[in-house]
Length: 110
Image 1: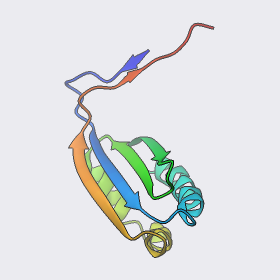
Image 2: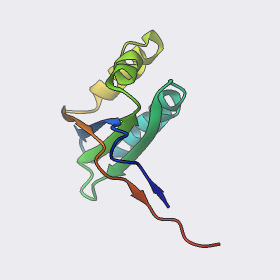
Image 3: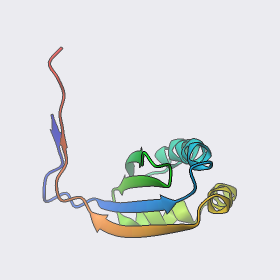
């Protein structure tokens, strides 16, 4: 079990990407590739993604050590093509900056 202590306020960004059912798989493919690159960025803690069953949304939560780490990632010139590709297949994105208040990861005994 892993729990983030409440004194360790990690920056998180929750994004809801709105897309069409015919683009959801491609969006997930692009976002998964981007997550690998983001994972190499200093300060990236985790990236999770969920897709809705109706095919119209992808929800991404990315946790960072600090907001400055997130801002540095957004400024990377090598990610600008990725951001443009994502923007072509979404109709809008709802972004919610936040801080991790609780994280409980359950592990089963071996």
